[in-house]
Length: 241
Image 1 (cartoon, rainbow, N blue to C red):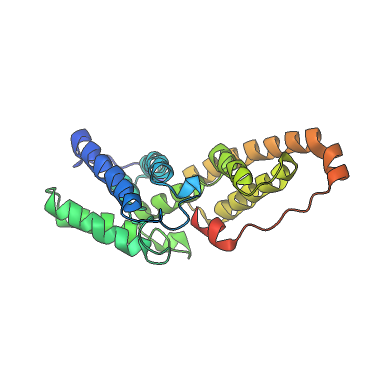
Image 2: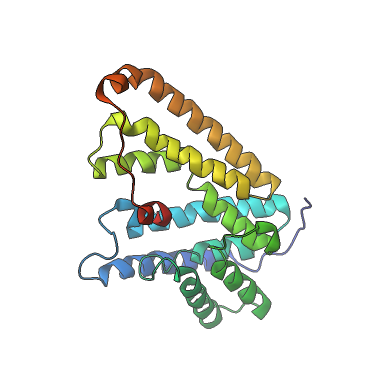
């Protein structure tokens, strides 16, 4: 790991304008659909949740990039656009569509070097890559790691518990639902490459383990009485949140 100092081509004002554009684009994606859009009845598929997720990934990816010596501007701009098409495009093409939107914005509203635009768009396009992260540019790797990290830890746990209410489950199912966050965390730990992301994922896993242990201690007796059979969450929901 080495830290390289680069002059930032993205001003605070430029980045704020990009944030506003992404926020408004997500809101418009929902408003344009008469029936509320794909799975919009789940709050984490709303424009508000999607923008919050994006900003979490922006912060995480920029932190990782700075620690690992990647171009933090490429990484954070790519993070800002990575899910912009999530609410209007199918899951398997949202990355490519997001890259198209990012390129159009960066070439028509900004004056950045072509190399910068190309790197940002490549990271957006490849952020759903499922292979070995070491095969990717460092900026793309940082983005993917941050995207994985936002689904584990306290935030991922809160979202999983929120899901219980929408599926008419009781607190008796909480331990198993939190267990799914741990599974995601273990998967993330196996995929991340950077020392920074590895440190973060293990910190978050530790906190989730503690929380599940407390849950099991407090509801164990009720669990033995009531039973602990939990219906499966549809795969589409797990893959798409």
